[in-house]
Image (tube, rainbow, N blue to C red; front, side):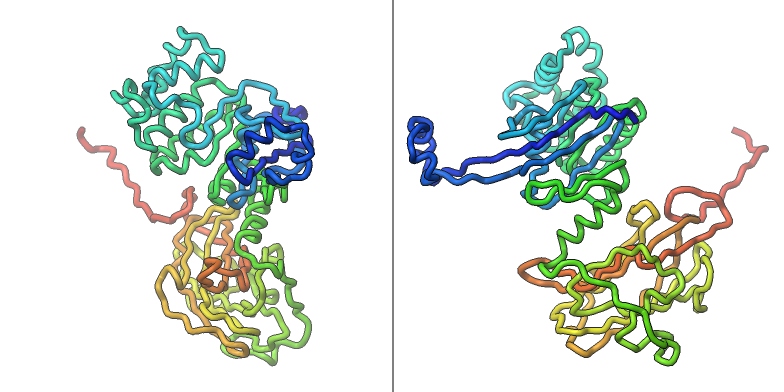
Length: 442
């Protein structure tokens, strides 16, 4: 990777003025030298982006994630040149092609063909060169004869297909993609990400915004988390996604401290689970991952687990197809009105293999009362190919106003090593049979 960034952002900020009345905008422009402007009686300032520094390097795929209103789209618009900053600077080195929010960049009264040629001319591509690329654009978009219809007649999916096809055929050094890809169907999304991988192999830098943490982990070299217009975190995608989930689901009490595991635990067990509430039994168990990520308000605590493989206490790695039983003990320090309990299985690079929770399963869960405890059993066959996997466990409160509140979320709590006889690849173990009949007649 080159040491010189292709995008350099220095002390970048963006503010908007919100006027009290429409007429105040006119008065402000006319009386901009008057004292009224300084008094702030006609408008108030909204900071969409606060001063930030960020470098993007050649060949990187960088995902930008954050809650609604965090400044993600504003940042991409400034980088793409469709919006001016209030202060600071953005230096872009190379040809940049952008696919921003749905509706940006195309004239709705022009046909798809006319818009494609217009975008090519804006990017400095001659009409003859666009003619040579045009068939590839139409083929990738898959919109066929609609290419000569006004784009205002297109569905959102058709619009995105054409917009993405045009953007990637501009031979960009830098590709900027906003949430627009979330509009397309699953097959087209897969086609787009295959193309992005091809472009990355050729050295293209990609910068995209998404709310999907899975896409960030799966496709990005680095992630940037924006929060209230600031760069809150940047680095390894899995770490940044964890911090994003912390901001998204946690309440105002912040991250919790892990309980200590001091004391004699051997004499305080029931059904194999430690009953001493001063002890975090999870930390004493086989397969416990000391690098787990934990947060929540701790009104309830995932206090201990026992892992069985084929009905036997787990002591070593399991075999693909083995039966997993996970017995879980949850204790309540305070009331949790509507508990949600769930489990997620992920690959070592953060891709979700499987997940389920009591709310989506529509299982009735009694209220958690202070001093009470739950015993939960998860049972499933580990039908995955050989490799390293992580089990995350969660307890939340289904709050009508805030969707769900994190009570005790323990991400990547258990490190499960799975071995398999076949060296198949992927995630799911389909146990495919293969045979060859060399004597068969065609």
